[in-house]
Structure formats: structure tokens, C-alpha cells
Image (cartoon, rainbow, N blue to C red; front, side):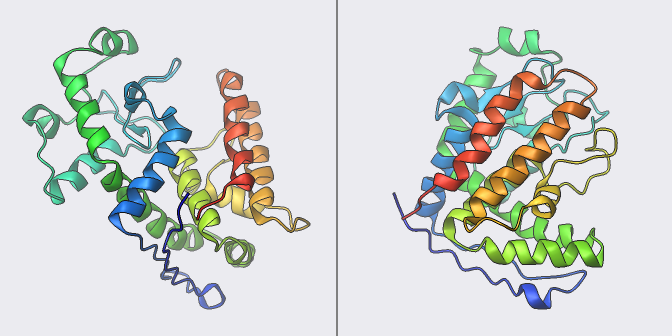
Length: 261
């Protein structure tokens, strides 16, 4: 594997309520390698899984991180990120087709329409672009994590801040930072009130608060807490999400066996 040269400027004992430095630095090559790990988690490293539309969902999931793109101007409860990724690519001088930069909503109105067009020029071109820009998509995910930690603390009580800070202090190895990157991309920050079932969230904040203390391996502790939060989500869901739970559990419990060199 590889060793990520992470620079974590993380002073947990002196986090202020509104700002705290949390920086992850890695080379372009390291970002690309990390991208393959995320791609393995999200799409089995298959090109066709860079553009998907899951059964039971109202939107396609696109790119390395399965970024949501709503097909209507009215947005659902989950955080839409694909338009932000497109803008990030433009800012980094990636040449994109006009159809992609001009559209305000996803051009496919249903899952059936999406898969009927799966091998048409638009989606074929999009998969090619996404497969060529793995490192840039990782940088996009890294930026989300860097913004997420201060945001999570800002949206927490003083007691919650103390617990979160202690658990972040335990999660400072390269493997742990990958875990944080992967989970926040997977299930979000946990601070959006719309991303709740029966008032209960399942994002990074909830996992950090739920981590048990009696494990020497913090990644095992994180995995157990994530399992608990995701199981609670499925139990509280307004529609059947049980079919996803096994895969989610495999993903979060795999964190404890991760080795990055």
C-alpha cells in the first residue's frame, strides 16, 4: 500500500466554537491512490458504477463519492453535491462538455430514463471524465472534511464538543483520517436537520458522539458506533432501507482492518 503524508493541524484542546484548523495535505499521487480506496468502497472500482441510480431513490449518484444530483429544482432531504463538484472541476481547469456546465438539474427524470440512456453519449462521456479525475474528486472530498469538523463542533453543545474532540484525538492516524474522509462522504456531517428520520441523524457527528470508550482500537470503536447509527437509521426510516444495511455494516467494520503504508 502507501503512506499518506498527512499534516493534521488539529489542536483539539483549544478548539474554538466557530473555527478550528483541520488540514489534510497529500500529494496528487497520494490523492489518486486514496481515490481508488474510496472508489472500491463506493463502486467496486468499476467504471460503470461512477454513474448510478439506486432503486428507491429519487436522484442519480455520480462520481467517486456517489455525489447526488437532483433532477428537479425542488431538492430532497439529502445534501446535493454533484453541481458543486462540477464547479470545483471548472475552477481547476478541467474541460467539461457544455451540456454538463449549463444544466441546473440532472437531465434524467427517472431511474428508468437514466438507464435507458446509460450507454448514450452523455453518460458515457461523464464516466470517462470522472474516471480521469479521481485525484481531483478526492481533493473535493478532503475539502468537505476540512470544513466538516469545525461545522460539527459549531453545531454541538459544550458537552458534545468535549466528547467529539476526545474522539477526534483518538482518530489521528492515516487510517483514521481515511475513515473520517470516507464516512463523511458516505453519510454526511450529521448537522443538517433535514437529514433525520424521526429526529435522529446518522452522520459523522452522531458516530463521533456514539463511539464506545472501552476499545483500544479507535477504528473498531468508530465502526461499532457507525453500525449503531446506521441500524437506527434503518429502523426509523419511512421506507424499507434494510436491503442496504448489510453492505453498510461491512463497509464500516472494514475500517478497523485498514492499513495505509
